[in-house]
Length: 440
Image 1 (cartoon, rainbow, N blue to C red):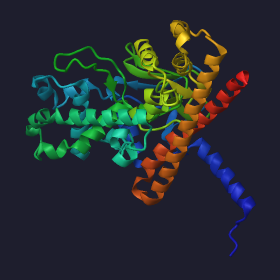
Image 2: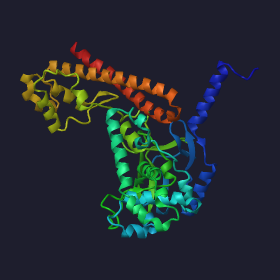
Image 3: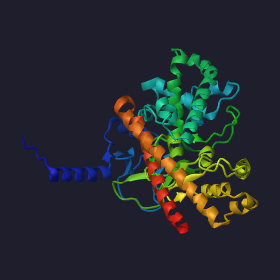
Image 4: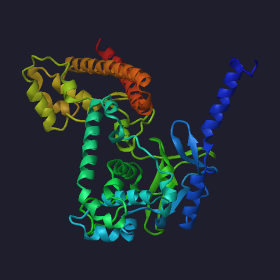
C-alpha cells in the first residue's frame, strides 16, 4: 500500500517538523494556561508579549508573540502576583508562624504554604498557579539511588549532601507541622509527608526569583530572598541569554528587560547565572547543551594518580597547594585544562632542586621546559583517564536504559551530562596535543 513513503518524503517531513518545532508549539489554548491567564488578570497582570509554548530541547517555555527590541520590557509582574513570605504571613498560617519557637525559616514557611494550598485543591486561591507547577522534579535529591550512583564523583558527593539536607529539613520541622493540626481535619502527618515536602522544597529551590526582604523576628536568621513568580517562572535558561531582571521598588513589580532583540515566535530565554552543568543539575534539575561554563572537575586523588609515587616531597607540595587554595576547582573546559589545573600540575611536577621556586609557579612564571612538558603530559594522561571513564559510564547507562524502562528519563538526564563531559574532554585532549607539540 502506497502511503507517500520514501527518502524524499522523509526528508520533507523532517524539514517541516524542524521548522515548526523551532518556532515552538503554542500551548496557550490549554485549560491550565487559560485559567492562569484569568488568575493573573485578576491580579492586574496581562502579558501582551509572551505566550506559553513547548520547544524542542527546553520543553515548556515562553514564546514571543511579536519581535522584541533591545531594552524592551518583556515582563512586569505585579507584587500581588508574587508568592512570598508576606503572602504566607497574611494567610491562615501567619498566626502559627508568629508564635512558633524557635522561629521557622523563610523557606519552611513557603514550603508549608505550598503543601497546604496544594492539599486544599479547588478551595485554594492559588490553584491556577499550582496546576502549572511540575508534578515531579529531577534534582539529584529526587533521583533514584542507582541513578545518583552514576553521577560524576564530585556531583555525587553534592547530591548526597543535598539529600541529607532535605531529610534534615523535613525531620527538624515535624513539630512545627504538628502545631498546624487545628487547621486540618486530616492528620498533618499525611498532609506534610516527605514526598509533599520534597516537592515543595524543589519548587522553591528551582523556581524562586531573588526578592530580598528585611529580617523579621517571626523568622529565623536565614536570608529571606525567595519569591515564586507565576508565569515568569516559565522562562527557561540559556547561558547565552542577555536580560536584566530585578524587583523594581518604585513600580512594585518584578521586571525583566531583554538586552538583545528577539524574533517573532522565538523562545524567550533568561540566564539563571554563569553555572556549570553540575550546578545546573544540582540546583535546577537539567543540563545545558554546549554550556560554555561546563567543565570536568579534577579531584586531589586523581591529580596525584599519575605522579611518581616515589616523590618524597609530594606531601609538602600538596600542602602548598592546599594552603594557597589551589586544590579545588581544577578543571578541564572546552578550551582545554584550566590555568589553575596546569598551575597545580606544574608545582607538583617540580624537581627537588626546583621546589624553592614554588611561589613563581603560583604567579604563572615558567620554571623550565622540562617542567612545562611534564605537567602537560600528566594533564593529557588525566584527560584520557576521564575519557575512558566517561565512555564506560555511558555504555553502562545504555545497558540500564534497556533494562530499567521506568528510569529512562532519569538515565537520559545523566547520560546527557556524561555526553557533554566527554565532548569537553575530547576538546581538551586536542588542545593538550597542540600544546605538547611545542616540546617535541
